[in-house]
Length: 327
Ligand code: BTN
Image (cartoon, rainbow, N blue to C red; front, side, top):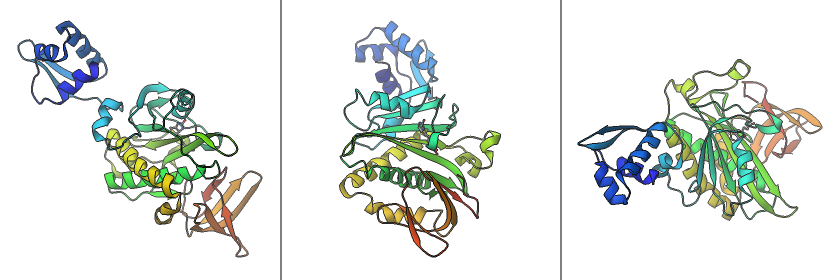
């Protein structure tokens, strides 16, 4: 009911009388007043005058379904959207929710994560108000072997969405990072629940730096935000919706044709190709030159002796050696 009242107010530029709302929705005027108070407590600024009624003056900068739905053009991704002011980790929340939520496309967005996770056991900090921490539940009918390719599919979607909205020139640091001006703007963490030959579900989460003015000392040298780069703020709702819109199109294509249609974009947006890199994986670490993205989305590097080696995304960390690319 609260959401219907909000829609009522949003669809009117002028005052709407409490009487009209209560008649239209068949609830008492006292109930209307109760919902108006609830909306105010969520940050909606609603004027009220006794003879005129209510008017929505300002909407809060929050990322719930009510605020995002008009910007979404998706069929199923984000059509179930849960929003939290504070959560442990949006990826972890989805993993639990996946036990009961049968379909795919559930999206969880949080303002703040108290135990946000990065790749390889690292911590990911999400503070209130400035960032976007968002996870998506997927159930593609693919083998566990091809599941890691979902990560570059989201990476390409994010780069396209952000380049469109900002006019900036973002790139992908294979396989998980989105970079701007050689600093990290966004990281992606993909987790999977699978059997040997089939995927039960995948959770793909992204943490995006949008309106932060500054970062903690430990990451200030390697992290950036859209705000820091362009000295202006961006609407997080628009960004969340545009990423989901781009991603649903890309994900549908991926389910039909695999990673092949994304290879050109992965090459185009790659910030690694042509650079010296250090590859650190389980039990090995070596330096090489990144030379190409292979047909299956893996990174091809050239070793000292000229031999070409394929690097699968798995548990590797890629560090740019010359021309700083954040790890
Ligand atoms: C990385 O660069 O190491 C990956 C960072 C991924 C962070 C996101 S924020 C939303 C989702 N929930 C998490 O706990 N982690 C991912």
